Length: 267
Length: 131
Image (cartoon, rainbow over all chains, first blue to last red; front, side, top):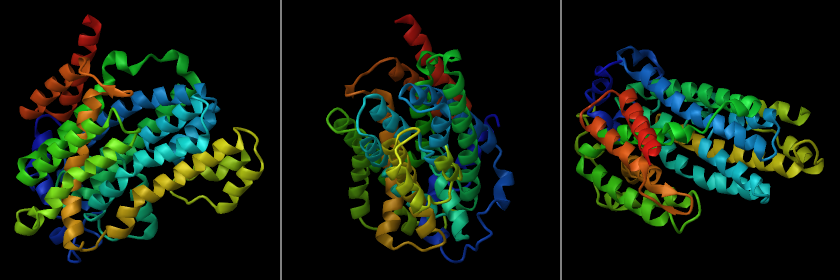
């Protein structure tokens, strides 16, 4: 990787400028285009995926420990990581279980947290080629904040490869670490003492940066952050991130998007 | 445990009868817990795959295209902001802010990605150690 890491992401299409979902995602881009063949010129991708997976894994260990403390058997803890595969919502579930609340309320607050995946999924989906239903479901399964954010950074032809590379790396880290925490939790300390809780906002900041070059997206970012922070102390978990989507409204309402203005800048 | 065997296949939708069985026979981890896990798993898969299933290979209508262009930066920025100052039930400027300042500097100087994350984590850990 090294320093061309970022360059690889920023150059080809000015990052998410390539996100122009309309022209590039159109029917002209045939099924093969995004399904992995173009990834060779993606030098930083694996290193990036591994870094993210390690940060996620440090919290997977916590999840395994907490899930067992909340009364799940170690195997059930691991199974939840496999079938749900959405970290924050799993923490929400075991948080409710640990507090003795009705389990279904834990599931509902988890789903509330995951509502944002609708928006991220649409953004990523618009850049994916049309494939078999099973393949698309698998792409959806691998969609998490981190894989979506990386998938959206770079030319549309690499979207599928980015999504799957980061998705699989994080899956391995998350599920493996859940098992580690669930079966051998006593051996591991609190990731916060190592500062690893900051790995998440730091990751998202690095992934946000290329979007900030364009004025409308910058406006959406500023509004989204302000709304989420304002809502954080008063709204239940999951709601602030959902409300952050409102930050995009003025930009959506403002008419023609960048995608429309500069269709061919993208590639 | 038998009930869980079919949970293990990731993308496969959970057959309805399994959920019903779990409801009717509360044992093992407890029926209500099994149901909660099933609801969270299925609901999450629906939310995550709606986009890839419905939007892939399609030309989005202009309004939706503008939405998918503007929503990711709004959501990413919200994740950055709440991850930096959000604590359970409130806001706090603490060691994380120092770590994020280093991360911002690293991003601005176009440092490689692992360095951004590592710089933020090490700074935060050191500030925590010192305070």
